[in-house]
Length: 288
Ligand SMILES: NC(=O)c1ccc[n+]([C@@H]2O[C@H](COP(=O)([O-])OP(=O)(O)OC[C@H]3O[C@@H](n4cnc5c(N)ncnc54)[C@H](OP(=O)(O)O)[C@@H]3O)[C@@H](O)[C@H]2O)c1
Image 1: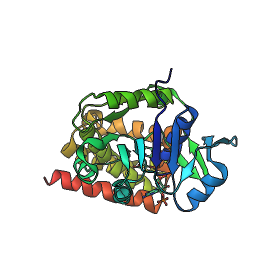
Image 2 (image 1 turned 90 degrees about the vertical axis):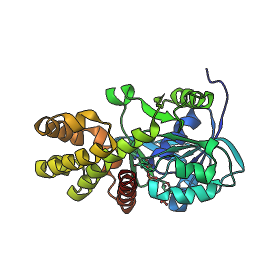
Image 3 (image 1 turned 30 degrees about the vertical axis):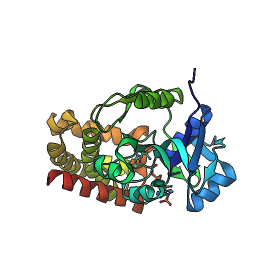
Image 4 (image 1 turned 180 degrees about the vertical axis):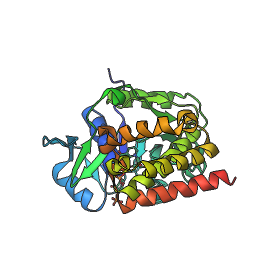
């Protein structure tokens, strides 16, 4: 049973923000999606439109949409690209409420806390995955991995606080499987160390299946991941297992619907800018 209806703002109406807002709306929360540009127009016209994988069946979820935040929320979820975070921080200084950053981010909590105040910030991985096809979010069909995998969320100092417990319960009730992670900063950094060389190799190849078909490019990407992960730690199997074992695993992942229906398939100036930004954050971390 849901305990309290939360008043939530989701900033960023792309793939993951729209999935999150639609799920929370369907679970009965008072959720609003903050959008801009053509996406704002599309959402005002149709609400969030969702389809599983390549399906022609489209579901519409009438999530309320705004172009400016109100003065206060119980929770603000930020679902933008890392290079877009500064513009969101500017928007959020005059808005009250806890803020959970749900994106790839290797810059730690400090700059976010400095801009918003130390008590307001939580860190999390993005909710769900998919691609934007026109105004339709094509998301991953549910599979064993998506059912079993638990996405991390946590306080910057690792404590298990009532608010992080409340947020995890709310997300789970809405179908997003989160777990409390005691070291979100390291977790996000390791994820970025894996994601940047892998994502850039996918870009260069022209897509996940194209990279799967090019073992030499895949081996180069794997070596890049290992270099980055040596600095950040984490993802031990990727660092330690022999290359001949890992390359086929990565190839089959790249051909799976999990990769094809994910941000890896989005080859855009925004995803290229995201990898550059994460790469700078990783460099700043290793040169500390
Ligand atoms: N998609 C996936 O499958 C997936 C999976 C795991 C993790 N992630 C990660 O999750 C994060 C978000 O990814 P995404 O795929 O949801 O990105 P996305 O589809 O590009 O969505 C970002 C949205 O935020 C909007 N935005 C940016 N700054 C804004 C601002 N100041 N005010 C209002 N709207 C703003 C963007 O608008 P514009 O288009 O106008 O810039 C865009 O609509 C990334 O770090 C990504 O790597 C994604």
